[in-house]
Image (cartoon, rainbow, N blue to C red; front, side):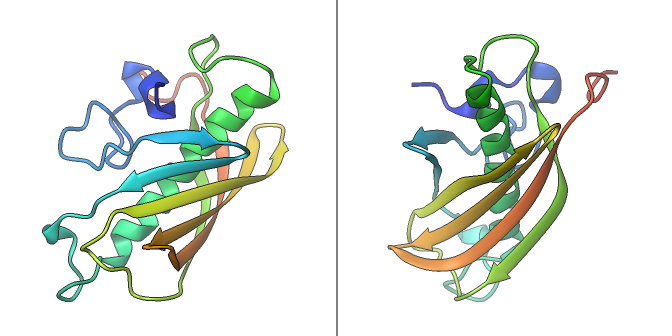
Length: 154
């Protein structure tokens, strides 16, 4: 099964968090699991804030890109379309709110789970949870806005 991000057009696949054309980025992969979305990501030692724990900016970027990918998939799903159909849906972040609940350890694969809370016009609201070994370490809320067709064009 292809991840949501595998369907992104090349001209908008450069994002540090989710772009397949950015070889220095996270290159996250997100999938449906029922009505939730899931990404699994293993932090690297260079993602350190203090020894043994992940930098908060990493957690925020994972929530951000997981949520915009979820927004795209949700929009396709709401229209009964496959993600490889045209016109493509791509989203950017209109708002990102993150609550850091506990330090996130580096030595485990993180599970990032998203739930679509609202689809209204060109806007999708996603609530995302980060778990480390089943323990919630962060929660986020993203308002994702459908990007204009001209975005990403040279």
